[in-house]
View 1 (cartoon, rainbow, N blue to C red):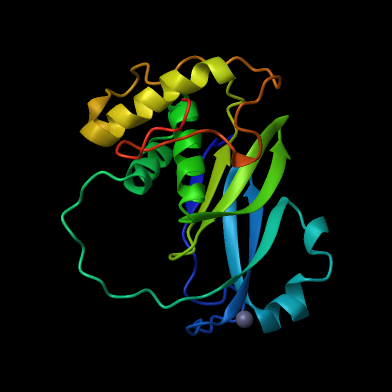
View 2 (cartoon, rainbow, N blue to C red):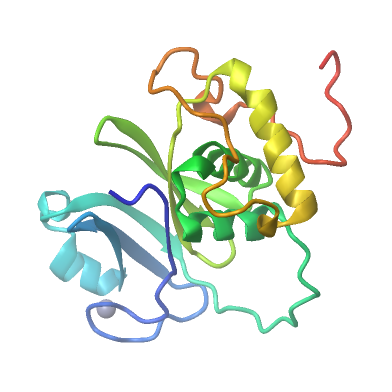
Length: 208
Ligand SMILES: [Zn+2]
């Protein structure tokens, strides 16, 4: 199964093909299509007429949420500096098991900055999976919870800081970038997104 995944928000209704207008509410269905996530964005009318009845009984149903479409602003791209967001996108696209902890920590950081919003929490094959939506672009991120232990957090945060300084090229494909994560649910240090995650440059936490 795919551990992490990004699905862009559609610009037209999947059912009727009509373009979404600025500020228009839409519904998103996340489905499991043979082990891969598939995202459908539909307008309210099509949702009510074709999708809402029995949506959760639909084959492969994973999640549903509602959003508001925003027309993407044409903004000039600044010189690309590695940010928590660009790094998260690179790690998700690479989908390497060794990145599990760093990927999760980056998502928690972005949630705290309100760049990502949690839309759903699922259990998939015994693991907790968070579904995030990007507040501005509407991209959906599915991120598996690596069940980090408290004593692993410091090392993972060091890895993330190093990556943010050096960029994703800092670590070779296949290199050990995160500590091995034992499969145990106890001492879950990041329950509910309350992990003490700081970015480089933030003031140190009192009593750290
Ligand atoms: Zn429609």
